[in-house]
Figure (tube, protein in one colour):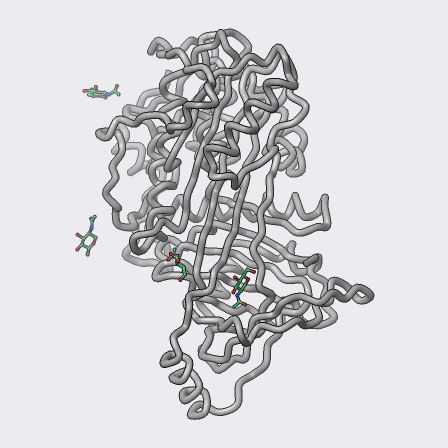
Length: 466
Ligand SMILES: *[C@@H]1O[C@H](CO)[C@@H](O)[C@H](O)[C@H]1NC(C)=O
Ligand SMILES: *[C@@H]1O[C@H](CO)[C@@H](O)[C@H](O)[C@H]1NC(C)=O
Ligand SMILES: *[C@@H]1O[C@H](CO)[C@@H](O)[C@H](O)[C@H]1NC(C)=O
Ligand SMILES: *[C@@H]1O[C@H](CO)[C@@H](O)[C@H](O)[C@H]1NC(C)=O
């Protein structure tokens, strides 16, 4: 077993001043999230601490209250953006973009993913993983120490990661109403207990969690029961998620990420009209197109052949809309999406007067996390959730498996009502500022919703069909 004091390690391995950020000390991401007194733990040995598990309440369709929480373990207080938050945002953006690209190369439909939610689900599974599998999770997440020998792994503190994710989400909520709601459901088979660490994890990164046990031996009844429980506890937003439940299932996992936003640049409903949307060269459909003239931050990227527009959504969140130039295929643009490209775009935006037309859309998706990983590489899926994954820290029962893992994303935009006064003000301004450039989002486009303090990507999506 290698054991080095943490401060010494940080000093030896990972402190240097990077050239362009002269005052910022670079710390390897792992050391921001490392477990206390971290050492490289030998894979063969059992963990020193005994696994603490607890019984799971049976699913009762009349009992819809979320799991109770220990108020002490929730730092409800909103923390300021720290180095930890910024580093984690970089990691989840990078993984989110890679997942998006792998997904989009396999299917050519609309896409809606939440990088922050996917990351949180994987970290929750990490909490139940055996050491070897845990090491694989850290590798994918960009949170391995980078110095471990083959036969040992330095573990991170998953709770720190999950709480930081929840902190990123809570930055967006500005005002009395939450714009982001994260829920987690885990359904386990009747005789199994679940680890307290995993249960704590489901609470760390959610606003409400529901852990219940279910009799899977009659799969059709189980499916009906689980789906109606989810529907009731999500206010009818999440429906018919699980199908083909296997009677020998151990655990079904579901998380939902619900974003409810308002355009701060007011689109007036009376200016919305049916206009053409060109799904491809041959297919045109008519969609309700909202129009607004005003000052926007945007840029024309001649190299990557696209136009990027920033749309403020709230005090701390914004959307980047990416529209390929006419005649440019969106599939050629997608492989160019990288974290540095996105931040370059954001830094190079210039303010100007636009007459912007945009389809009035809301959307939702359910993504199977196993498929998402398998699209990246079948071996990744096998090691993290599939045949080679081991979850000895998840339950008291042996050979426990995560049979289904689904991420539901709901993206809903509503327009804030504009008073007549505000509308008149807009008109005056426009007359003063001259002739706007017309930009119509009337063909397939990419969009992302970003938390503005950390620049974490909350949602990443593509619309090709309306
Ligand atoms: C870490 O080490 C310190 C000092 O040796 C000890 O007091 C503390 O309990 C340790 N923490 C854990 C989680 O083992
Ligand atoms: C965040 O930072 C501001 C300004 O630096 C400070 O006034 C405020 O108290 C901080 N909030 C928290 C929760 O630390
Ligand atoms: C967008 O669509 C929603 C739902 O159909 C509608 O309530 C809203 O007024 C529309 N907004 C605009 C600006 O057209
Ligand atoms: C968005 O605007 C609607 C209508 O004005 C309002 O009911 C809703 O609370 C707002 N949502 C947020 C998150 O501010």
